[in-house]
Length: 254
Image 1: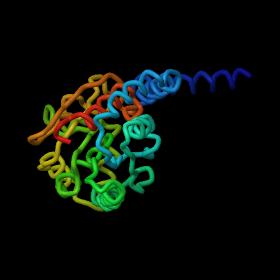
Image 2 (image 1 turned 30 degrees about the horizontal axis):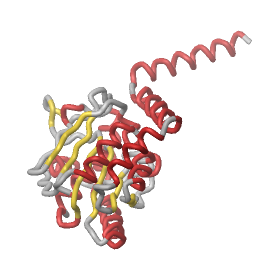
Image 3 (image 1 turned 135 degrees about the horizontal axis):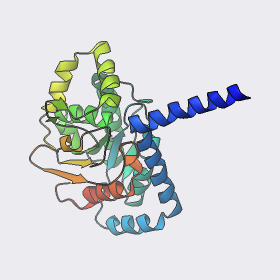
């Protein structure tokens, strides 16, 4: 019995250390709470989305998830909002997105073409976290295929000599790229991509995964906004979703 108690306390201490030191687990917890709040009180947000409906031009939004996430999990609330304002989501077939940017490019292009065929118009590309990195590279390579770019909690600049990522994202990101591709070349490409379409960057001041100061949209037509929340839950963050819908349906550039 005493041994079992000791094991329990040791396990609890390990978990507590992970929660305190990591912040990543804490972000996941905040995201779960945010999703719960939305499910309990969706009427408020649906009323706001109905306000946007009048201004919407039907478009496909290709949504690229972050590393280790599925699109429908990463963008659950945004998908509902898009349907409400007569836009529609298109998901690349990327699994849990353990893809290099060049591998992702093929999957994103397939989804972009699918969105174009369905709407008769160019698609908007939206990427969260590492999916935003892949989206920036795609937009730089194929501006003629898109009418807009949205990046969510995605670093686009170097801050204090470092890309605005901490070890939780940097380690898997670099590992994935280096397996088959030139990491330095790809990093330079996404940090210097010439994005010619309207670009919205959504950042989180309290983000423990990505340095919020590095989330800057570039190009002629750009907008950078801040919302409260957590890194992991941005695709289901009500404030972020409302801002994105406002961008999609009312920003004159689109």
